[in-house]
Image (cartoon, rainbow, N blue to C red; front, top):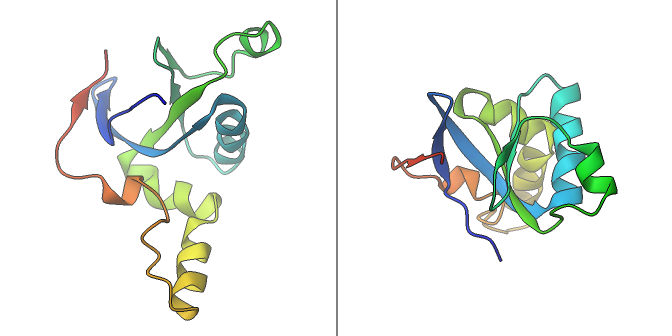
Length: 115
């Protein structure tokens, strides 16, 4: 499984990893975020991708795990669009800690440099 930093500097701004997930699922989440006005980027082990490279997907390009990142300032919007806040509230009502909501919420003050 690929490992990605929780926080990175990308194009000079802090970005936060929402999750690490298979490429096809990440691209679906990106579409949801885009429709809600949230910018996102996918990081494969090889490169950063701001656009959905349909030709890469159709030709069998990298389909493994990727990191899905959003600008730190848009994290609350991204989590709401993806339904994470709703899951947290439901978990709190049922007695769950809600700690599994996202890795992005656990992002510490450190930061990686996008390469």
